[in-house]
Length: 404
Ligand SMILES: [Zn+2]
Ligand SMILES: [Zn+2]
Image (cartoon, rainbow, N blue to C red):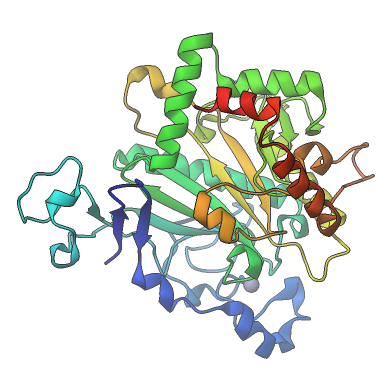
């Protein structure tokens, strides 16, 4: 049974989920089964996500099935465009229970007493909902192999699933993410997304919301709206602006070429996004995501193999501490290329060293002429020098002034 465990001193929370260890790594299998790679749409008989292999997955939760042909096809048969399934190897489950025999006693909890009884503050049943969204019936790897319509349908499924899970009234927070390529943690190459719903808001998200609330109390405005206005005025980190969205390299980028995409208008929950008349927001958003990943892939075409990347959709939690917080968050999508891994320093301190400043990571020029500064081996020594030169300068004092 999966379990959430929290470190009493650092507050770090992990999910211990032995079930995940059993998942097969399809990348290995495909090397053996690649003889059918020339089939229509790249069909692989060993791939559980390819159209025609529906019997290799658990029964679907839902799917989009075009109704043009005799009212659409039956569940768990071909004829779908996006398909949502329970994860066969879930990180969290809907019926988890306490496992008191392995837990810390309560005196380790700052809220606990001295009794030898198990502490339910520090270990909690791994309750949740974990599903897979198969983005397309075609055996393709990245959103850039998908059509704009397919990417739009994928985001439409995200929205539908968020709406349904919110209506269940059981979950506090939902994270939807996508891992593309082995280096980004994918175990199956066929383009898919994952969704995890949790009964609480994870500590890092809570602390972000707390700061956003403090900002709003001080300035009577949304931090993210103000940040977008500043960045659009400055233009140094903007990747692309459309009518309703902005893609930018965040000021505090953890990795080279990290990109975030925001709606310009203040919208807290992704599930509240509506199609507006002839301006279809989801389609516009999908096209921007696809163009941004295309730029990333083109920019690193000098690397061996396809670009591995993650993307993460962060949206307003369903449960917040007060009614005032219901519209606090400003949803956005983070795209994180796997150009470098977190290493010893990052694990030890929680601080990331990013050798490519976001001002140089951004793409300049119009769409199509992607110019992109990623020359990591050349830039690393300069960044290290800059860090060590900074220790006594006034900028460092300002740094301390901002972050107590
Ligand atoms: Zn496939
Ligand atoms: Zn906002």
